[in-house]
Length: 208
Image (tube, rainbow, N blue to C red):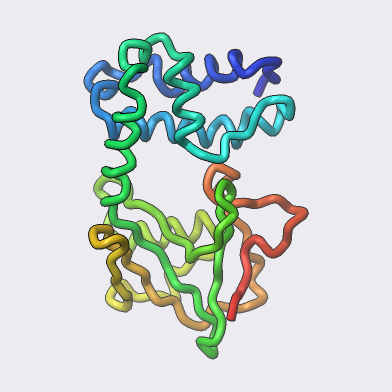
């Protein structure tokens, strides 16, 4: 990955990778467009900023997206509608079901939490389904990506809890029992999703 001297150069790179070759019909779909910008955001934080410490860190997708809209030529006709478009995307994203796992030790007295890279908040490993993916497969994938732990052998697709967030978002969490406390938990994702700085060993941990 080349080092960039300016934010302008870095934005041009991610626009080339994630936006410039998108079909027109996808550019005109709010969800598809912003999911691409979200991918560009993660790529910027994962691959560009580590080599370019002079570039700003964007803790919020909205701030990064606003910079993209202000810089990308193909989005120029929609620049004046950015606030409305982002509000539409946020509303859409808030309805997407998420799936994950509750990793419990053998006594069911402790469980595993992950720390968000951008917000710094702690939560159970979970995430959104990919197209055509079943909830159980999504939960296993997200848990593996965020903790490094493969819950396949200690979980059951029929053993889960469901709750609804904000009256409209379904969250399904699969129960995983007898997870060894000495497992070397570590995220497989880069910083776009879960904080993984080696100087902070408690970023994934058991909690009472």
